[in-house]
Image 1 (cartoon, one colour):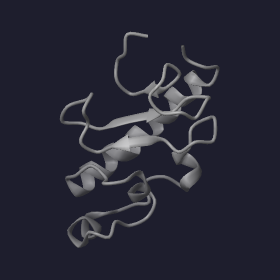
Image 2 (cartoon, one colour; image 1 turned 60 degrees about the vertical axis):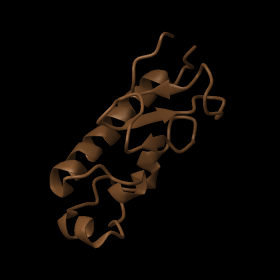
Image 3 (cartoon, rainbow, N blue to C red; image 1 turned 60 degrees about the horizontal axis):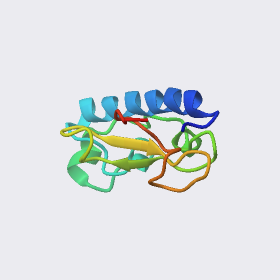
Length: 106
């Protein structure tokens, strides 16, 4: 079951997804970590193409419950894309209140 912040979390997912898309457009790769949307990546080849920051600050990387979004650049649920999710109101990863960017049976 999704908590009361699910709609806000979905909107934030969208904002971060747009930043990720811009990062990929500029660098040709998905960011290795979400912090690469704010701070220039340490990889020299990626850093040369980086035109960020793509988000204003790290507060954009937290869900409505104050937890950092979870992220995998090599998505297992969105093959060839990214997986990103909130751990939901309980802050515990992998249970029913998680808010992912992939379709679930919930």
